[in-house]
Length: 344
Image (cartoon, rainbow, N blue to C red; front, side):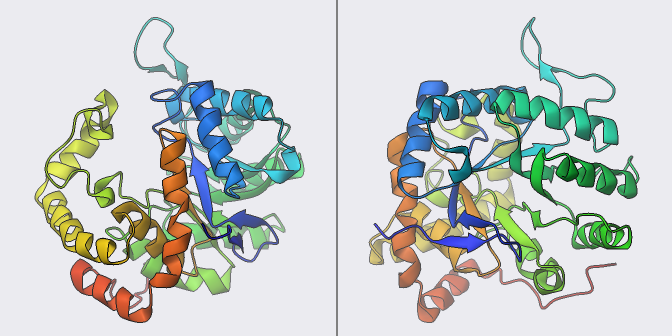
């Protein structure tokens, strides 16, 4: 397998592994501490240094599992790039399913950013995270308040870089401008969805931000929640993510007319993957890596063997010549339109 590549996070001096590992869906729902440690060990052995999490994943239990796995691993903290994301707080309901929320457990107020960060650090069993994200925009909190609060998190040493997730280009630019005006630490990175079937934001909307503010990207869902693996080509198999009770929304998307059209595109890509002697998942991950504006691709897995298979996407990247990429474009037929005035 090819050696891990490391990329700078935007124009920062931080190196992150081109392939990273995230806990969404799997930690707690599918993996306990032992299973999480197996997966993280496989990723770490392949050169992964960035491990992604969020306060909302399994209502904090995902962070607890990752923190315990890291404690058991014996790895040096300095060798890891850890993240959390703040927006949806809350806690598990001790009396049954679902979560409990206080009135200030959500959003990007100074109070929730402060309390959410402290709670995440406690669950992860670390003094700081390397990256902290505003998990969604908060239309109810003044942006100045959020920017100041994230700056304070950095100044207190609880995080080293802050960024956004699923913010518009205009919102990111506004936050950056506020930070520069007030002499605060500006956002460094964005965590958007990006894959063969979801391209406009990363390739078009953010186009100016890479050079103008040095935006880095830590992309999620490179496999479009499993659609790009091909496992849904003939229906929804038992035991897959789409059968989990909390993912009916995703099943509805796959069953929609657009979802079915996307599955036809995946079927069209399968022969190309076979020609390149790789899996459909490896092709999809490698395709994301070809984009130079992608700092790291967050992968997920429910077992160590799956991690090892995902890491082999590094071997596929050199095979994606301009000719092969054009063949992919012909099948996808979704190249983003030329850049628009995304600031509105």
